[in-house]
Image (cartoon, rainbow, N blue to C red; front, side):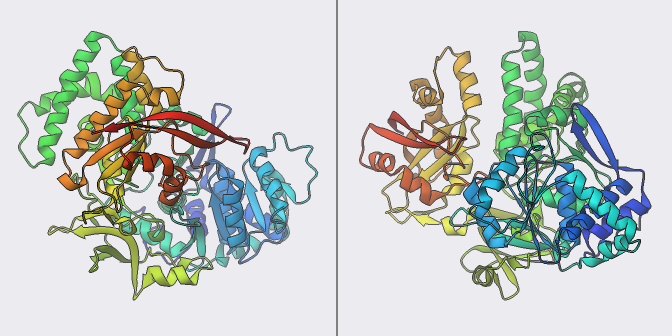
Length: 639
C-alpha cells in the first residue's frame, strides 16, 4: 500500500468530513483550496479548511440546523459554498444545491420538495431571489450569504453573513472542546452527502439522494482505472448543482486530497484555466467543441506562414491518430511529427488553452464529435469518454487510456456490474447506486428493481466488454413506416458540427424525419464575417441563404451515415436558441420535447404540410422575468 493510500483504504464506509479531518492531520500545511478574488489567488490549507468547516457546522447548529434539516445552496462556485455543503452534510442534514441561474419556480420546487428551512446564498442577487420566494414559501428561517456587498442595509429577519456564522461557530467550539470531535463523528456513511436534482426533461426534477458511501464508492471505482490519482490539480468550474462537480470537487477532491482551484467568475474560466493548467479536466462535448472553435478561429486570423506550419503538423498528427484508433500502423515519420510539432504547434496551443499540464482528460454527458475527439488526441491530450449518471454518483464506465474506441464509452468500472435487459435497457449494480429519490417512493420503486438500477438508457455490450450507449430508452420512437430510432442519437451527431448549437429531430409517427436547428452564434457569426455576410442579429443571421446552405451541408454529412428511412428530409433554422429560462431545455441543456413540440407546433405543422416558409412567433423571457414575442418569417428547406 502506498503512503498516500494509507490515509484512505478505499473503504467507502466513511464520510467526507472524516476524510477532511484525516487530511488536516496528515498534511495540515498543504494547500487544499485556491480561490481567485480581486485578481489574487487566496490559499487555504487542509487544516484551515477543516477549521472553517467545523465553524460553519457549529454555527449552523447554533441557528437550529440539525439532522434532517434542509439546506438549499445557490450560487456560482465559491469556497464558502463548498464549505457550507460539507458542514451541512456533517450534521446529517439534507444539502440541496441548485443552479445559480435557476428560475424562482425551479427553486421553489426544490424548497417545497425538500422542506428546506436554511439557504446558503452566494451574493445579493441570490439573496434577493430567495427573499422574494419567502413570500410564497414562508418556511425559510435563515439565509446565510457569502458576499456581503450590497446587503449591509437589509433588515429582513433571518439574514446571517458567512463571517457571522463562522464567528458563532468559533465561539461555540471554544466553549465546548469536545464539539469538534462530535461534529466529525455525527454523520454516518449511509447518511446523505448531497441531494442532486435530476434534469427534469419529462417532468418535475427529482431529488437523487446520494450517501457518503455512494460518493466514495464512485470515486474508488474510477480510481481503479486511473481516472485520477492522489493530489490532482483541478479547476472547480462545473455547476455546483451537477453531480460531476460534486463527485470531483468534494468527493475525489477530499478523498484524494486534490488541489482545488476555484475561478473568479464564470466569465474568467478560460483565463483561470490557463493560469492553473490543471492535471485533471472534465468537460462536456460542447466545451471541447468551443475550445476547438477558438483554435480554428485564431488560425483563420493568423498569418499565411503560421497557417502553413499549423496544417503541416496538425493535419499529419490527426491522420496518424485516425490510423492508431483504427488499429493500423502509423508511418515512421510519426515520431518526428510529434517531436517538432510539440515545440512549434502542439505545445503552444495546449499552453494557450490551459491544457499543458493535463494528465487525465474526459468528456461525458453526451456523444462527442469524431473530429473533435481526434483533434485533442492528435494534440497530445489523451481525451477519454466516460458514462455516468446522477443516480450512480457520476461514474459507470470509462475508456482506459490505451483502449479508446470512438463508438464506445469503455468498459464498466471495477465495482460496477452492467447488463442489458430484454428491451435493450442498461442495468447497473454498484456501491455508488443512489439510495432513492427524495420523498418519492413511487419513482424509486420504478428505478430500483430486484437489486438493479434501471438507467433508462438504451445500449449494448460488445464482445470485448465495451459498452455502447445509444440514448434514452424512453425516446425510442417510430416513424409512420415503422422505422425505429432515438432522436437524441441523431441530434448528437448533428451537433458534431461547430455551427449547430442545438437541434430537435422530429418524425415520431410522421412520414419522414425533419430538424429544427439553432445555430451557434459565435461560430456561424465568425464564418459569416470571413465571407462578407452581413447581419443584424441572431434572428437575421439564422435566415441568411448562405447560412441555410451551411446547415444543409452539416445535415447532409449526417444523412450519409443514416439508413434511407431515417434521413432528414426537411429543416428549418430557428430565430433564437433553445433557452432554459423559456423552459425549452434543462439547465444541463437537455431538450424538453413536450415543451418544444407545443411551442413550435405551427412550425412543425408547416414542415409536414410541405410549406416553404412559416411566420413564427417565439416567446422570450427576459432577465427581469418579463416576456416578449419575436416574430420572424422562417424558411423551410428541402434536403
